[in-house]
Image (tube, rainbow, N blue to C red; front, side):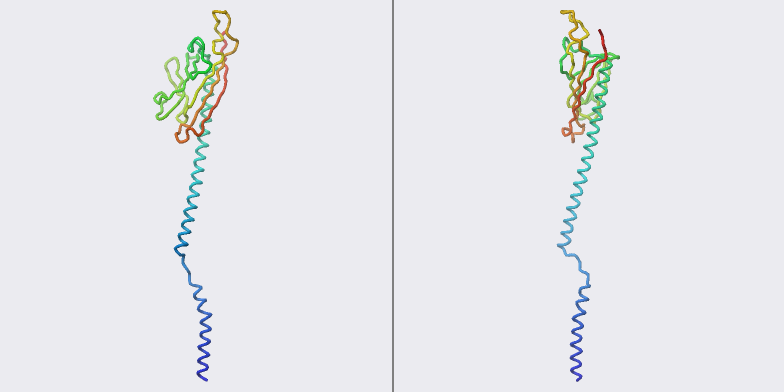
Length: 218
Protein backbone atom coordinates (compact mmCIF):
# COMPACT_ATOMS: atom_id res chain seq x y z
CA UNK A 1 0.00 0.00 0.00
CA UNK A 2 2.76 2.37 0.92
CA UNK A 3 4.66 1.55 -2.28
CA UNK A 4 1.64 2.28 -4.42
CA UNK A 5 1.17 5.70 -2.79
CA UNK A 6 4.84 6.50 -3.33
CA UNK A 7 4.57 5.60 -7.00
CA UNK A 8 1.48 7.81 -7.34
CA UNK A 9 3.36 10.68 -5.69
CA UNK A 10 6.27 10.32 -8.12
CA UNK A 11 3.87 10.20 -11.07
CA UNK A 12 2.06 13.31 -9.84
CA UNK A 13 5.38 15.12 -9.40
CA UNK A 14 6.39 14.35 -12.95
CA UNK A 15 3.09 15.71 -14.18
CA UNK A 16 3.52 18.89 -12.18
CA UNK A 17 7.06 19.33 -13.49
CA UNK A 18 5.86 18.92 -17.05
CA UNK A 19 3.60 21.96 -16.63
CA UNK A 20 5.90 24.10 -14.50
CA UNK A 21 9.19 23.83 -16.41
CA UNK A 22 7.97 25.26 -19.76
CA UNK A 23 6.47 28.20 -17.91
CA UNK A 24 9.78 29.14 -16.32
CA UNK A 25 11.82 28.56 -19.50
CA UNK A 26 9.60 30.81 -21.68
CA UNK A 27 9.97 33.75 -19.30
CA UNK A 28 13.78 33.91 -19.65
CA UNK A 29 14.78 37.10 -21.78
CA UNK A 30 16.51 36.33 -25.07
CA UNK A 31 19.15 38.73 -26.62
CA UNK A 32 19.69 39.75 -30.28
CA UNK A 33 21.67 37.47 -32.49
CA UNK A 34 24.67 38.71 -34.47
CA UNK A 35 22.74 38.49 -37.76
CA UNK A 36 19.90 40.60 -36.38
CA UNK A 37 22.37 43.27 -35.19
CA UNK A 38 24.11 43.37 -38.57
CA UNK A 39 20.80 43.68 -40.45
CA UNK A 40 19.62 46.47 -38.16
CA UNK A 41 22.93 48.28 -38.53
CA UNK A 42 22.76 48.00 -42.34
CA UNK A 43 19.22 49.42 -42.43
CA UNK A 44 20.29 52.28 -40.18
CA UNK A 45 23.28 53.13 -42.41
CA UNK A 46 21.10 53.08 -45.55
CA UNK A 47 18.52 55.36 -43.91
CA UNK A 48 21.23 57.82 -42.83
CA UNK A 49 22.66 57.84 -46.37
CA UNK A 50 19.27 58.57 -47.93
CA UNK A 51 18.59 61.38 -45.46
CA UNK A 52 22.03 62.84 -46.15
CA UNK A 53 21.42 62.87 -49.90
CA UNK A 54 18.03 64.53 -49.43
CA UNK A 55 19.54 67.20 -47.19
CA UNK A 56 22.37 67.83 -49.65
CA UNK A 57 19.92 68.15 -52.56
CA UNK A 58 17.75 70.60 -50.62
CA UNK A 59 20.75 72.76 -49.70
CA UNK A 60 22.03 72.78 -53.31
CA UNK A 61 18.57 73.72 -54.63
CA UNK A 62 18.35 76.56 -52.15
CA UNK A 63 21.78 77.80 -53.18
CA UNK A 64 20.82 77.65 -56.88
CA UNK A 65 17.64 79.65 -56.22
CA UNK A 66 19.55 82.33 -54.30
CA UNK A 67 22.14 82.54 -57.10
CA UNK A 68 19.42 82.93 -59.74
CA UNK A 69 17.75 85.67 -57.72
CA UNK A 70 21.10 87.45 -57.43
CA UNK A 71 21.62 87.24 -61.20
CA UNK A 72 18.17 88.67 -61.92
CA UNK A 73 18.77 91.52 -59.48
CA UNK A 74 22.18 92.29 -61.00
CA UNK A 75 20.80 92.21 -64.57
CA UNK A 76 18.04 94.63 -63.61
CA UNK A 77 20.51 97.04 -62.00
CA UNK A 78 22.85 96.93 -65.03
CA UNK A 79 20.07 97.60 -67.51
CA UNK A 80 18.62 100.40 -65.38
CA UNK A 81 22.03 102.11 -65.23
CA UNK A 82 22.68 101.76 -68.97
CA UNK A 83 19.19 102.93 -69.90
CA UNK A 84 19.61 105.98 -67.69
CA UNK A 85 22.96 106.83 -69.32
CA UNK A 86 21.55 106.53 -72.84
CA UNK A 87 18.47 108.62 -72.09
CA UNK A 88 20.46 111.43 -70.49
CA UNK A 89 23.14 111.50 -73.19
CA UNK A 90 23.56 111.01 -76.91
CA UNK A 91 25.44 108.55 -79.09
CA UNK A 92 29.00 109.66 -79.81
CA UNK A 93 28.94 109.06 -83.58
CA UNK A 94 32.26 110.86 -84.03
CA UNK A 95 34.02 108.31 -81.82
CA UNK A 96 32.63 105.48 -83.96
CA UNK A 97 33.93 107.03 -87.18
CA UNK A 98 32.16 107.75 -90.47
CA UNK A 99 29.53 105.10 -89.80
CA UNK A 100 29.02 103.29 -86.54
CA UNK A 101 28.69 99.51 -86.72
CA UNK A 102 25.17 98.17 -86.37
CA UNK A 103 26.48 95.83 -83.65
CA UNK A 104 29.25 96.79 -81.25
CA UNK A 105 30.65 95.56 -77.96
CA UNK A 106 31.42 99.16 -76.96
CA UNK A 107 28.86 101.84 -76.21
CA UNK A 108 30.14 105.39 -76.76
CA UNK A 109 28.04 108.24 -75.42
CA UNK A 110 28.27 111.95 -74.81
CA UNK A 111 26.85 112.73 -71.41
CA UNK A 112 26.51 115.77 -69.24
CA UNK A 113 29.98 115.20 -67.82
CA UNK A 114 31.67 114.53 -71.16
CA UNK A 115 32.29 111.39 -73.13
CA UNK A 116 31.45 107.97 -71.79
CA UNK A 117 32.46 104.48 -72.88
CA UNK A 118 30.86 101.26 -71.64
CA UNK A 119 32.58 97.96 -72.38
CA UNK A 120 33.07 94.44 -71.09
CA UNK A 121 36.45 93.60 -69.56
CA UNK A 122 38.19 90.44 -68.36
CA UNK A 123 41.05 92.33 -66.74
CA UNK A 124 41.10 91.36 -63.06
CA UNK A 125 43.00 94.53 -62.15
CA UNK A 126 40.50 96.79 -63.89
CA UNK A 127 37.53 94.88 -62.50
CA UNK A 128 38.93 95.14 -59.00
CA UNK A 129 38.54 91.50 -57.96
CA UNK A 130 40.74 88.50 -58.63
CA UNK A 131 40.17 85.13 -60.24
CA UNK A 132 38.45 84.35 -63.53
CA UNK A 133 36.45 87.56 -63.90
CA UNK A 134 34.40 89.41 -66.49
CA UNK A 135 32.85 92.73 -65.60
CA UNK A 136 31.41 95.88 -67.18
CA UNK A 137 33.59 98.98 -67.05
CA UNK A 138 32.50 102.59 -67.46
CA UNK A 139 35.31 104.86 -68.66
CA UNK A 140 34.63 108.59 -68.59
CA UNK A 141 36.36 111.37 -70.47
CA UNK A 142 37.93 112.72 -67.28
CA UNK A 143 39.90 109.48 -66.87
CA UNK A 144 37.81 107.89 -64.15
CA UNK A 145 36.90 104.22 -64.43
CA UNK A 146 33.96 102.61 -62.65
CA UNK A 147 32.86 98.99 -62.32
CA UNK A 148 29.17 98.37 -62.94
CA UNK A 149 29.03 94.74 -61.79
CA UNK A 150 29.88 92.80 -58.63
CA UNK A 151 32.04 89.68 -58.16
CA UNK A 152 28.84 87.61 -57.93
CA UNK A 153 28.31 88.07 -61.68
CA UNK A 154 30.30 86.88 -64.67
CA UNK A 155 29.50 88.89 -67.81
CA UNK A 156 29.45 86.42 -70.70
CA UNK A 157 28.45 88.84 -73.44
CA UNK A 158 27.55 92.51 -73.88
CA UNK A 159 26.33 93.79 -77.25
CA UNK A 160 24.91 97.13 -78.38
CA UNK A 161 22.77 97.51 -81.51
CA UNK A 162 22.90 101.13 -82.68
CA UNK A 163 20.21 102.47 -84.96
CA UNK A 164 20.64 104.42 -87.17
CA UNK A 165 24.32 103.71 -87.95
CA UNK A 166 24.89 107.32 -89.06
CA UNK A 167 24.35 110.50 -87.09
CA UNK A 168 20.84 111.72 -87.90
CA UNK A 169 21.67 115.22 -86.64
CA UNK A 170 24.56 115.88 -89.07
CA UNK A 171 23.84 117.08 -92.62
CA UNK A 172 25.33 114.96 -95.39
CA UNK A 173 27.73 117.29 -97.31
CA UNK A 174 27.00 115.49 -100.55
CA UNK A 175 23.20 115.75 -100.47
CA UNK A 176 22.89 118.61 -97.95
CA UNK A 177 20.22 116.50 -96.27
CA UNK A 178 20.00 114.67 -93.00
CA UNK A 179 20.73 110.97 -93.57
CA UNK A 180 17.63 109.86 -91.69
CA UNK A 181 14.81 111.08 -89.50
CA UNK A 182 15.10 108.26 -87.01
CA UNK A 183 15.77 109.20 -83.41
CA UNK A 184 18.91 107.33 -82.23
CA UNK A 185 18.13 104.13 -80.39
CA UNK A 186 20.31 101.58 -78.61
CA UNK A 187 19.34 97.94 -78.04
CA UNK A 188 21.26 96.36 -75.18
CA UNK A 189 21.78 92.57 -75.17
CA UNK A 190 23.37 91.29 -71.98
CA UNK A 191 24.24 87.72 -70.98
CA UNK A 192 25.48 87.07 -67.46
CA UNK A 193 26.28 83.98 -65.42
CA UNK A 194 27.19 83.15 -61.86
CA UNK A 195 30.50 84.43 -60.58
CA UNK A 196 30.86 81.16 -58.66
CA UNK A 197 32.79 78.67 -60.84
CA UNK A 198 30.73 75.83 -59.32
CA UNK A 199 27.50 77.11 -60.94
CA UNK A 200 28.98 78.88 -63.96
CA UNK A 201 27.53 77.59 -67.19
CA UNK A 202 24.48 76.04 -65.54
CA UNK A 203 22.32 79.15 -65.23
CA UNK A 204 23.11 81.78 -67.92
CA UNK A 205 20.70 84.70 -68.04
CA UNK A 206 20.15 86.80 -71.17
CA UNK A 207 18.23 90.06 -71.01
CA UNK A 208 17.51 92.64 -73.68
CA UNK A 209 16.02 96.10 -73.81
CA UNK A 210 15.85 99.04 -76.22
CA UNK A 211 16.12 102.70 -75.27
CA UNK A 212 15.86 105.89 -77.31
CA UNK A 213 17.97 108.94 -76.60
CA UNK A 214 16.04 112.03 -75.52
CA UNK A 215 18.47 114.48 -77.04
CA UNK A 216 17.25 116.23 -80.20
CA UNK A 217 19.89 118.40 -81.87
CA UNK A 218 18.27 119.74 -85.06
